[in-house]
Image 1: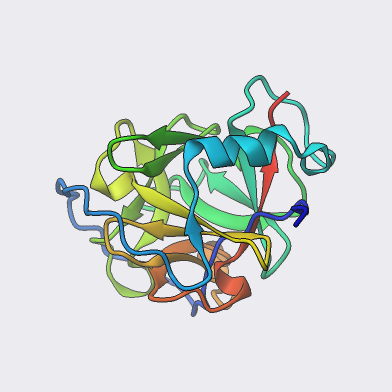
Image 2: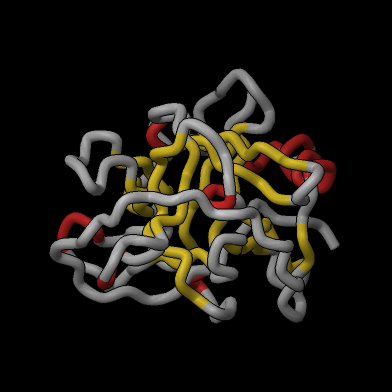
Length: 216
């Protein structure tokens, strides 16, 4: 079947966010890759290259970049692109939010870096050159929020990318806690549309994204 321009990530619903507690980060081991959910298959670097290299339509709405492995994520739930909030004050600096109406540049760009040994991806934000981590030690409604804040890659920064052929969509699963990334459409305030690794299953548009190639 011919793939469309969509590549989706699985995300679930959120509630209002106000403050959050930020315990000190500790090292986390890289967990074994979890089993694929029914109807989904894990995507390796070769498969991802086929998606991005052969899909001119995916590039149409986006500005040209220098490398073919540079991607942008668009939430299916609210049709907005994921951006890195580099100007947010601590402890939310670098939080990932699906809030941009269009691809505007590095704020919405990510390098998907494949690791053969663990068969996982690390997502490096082009906005601040930091790797996206799952903040497992955050508390309250911000627990497991995604933040581009790491200068190296460990268990906090590893994700499995899944593809569903019948839906032509993709989903991301954190290997740190085994949960799927969700766009918190129901949040209000500064963390509205934040991404969190908090869903046990892929339930629908909350966890789904379109993936665009922003390579030249």
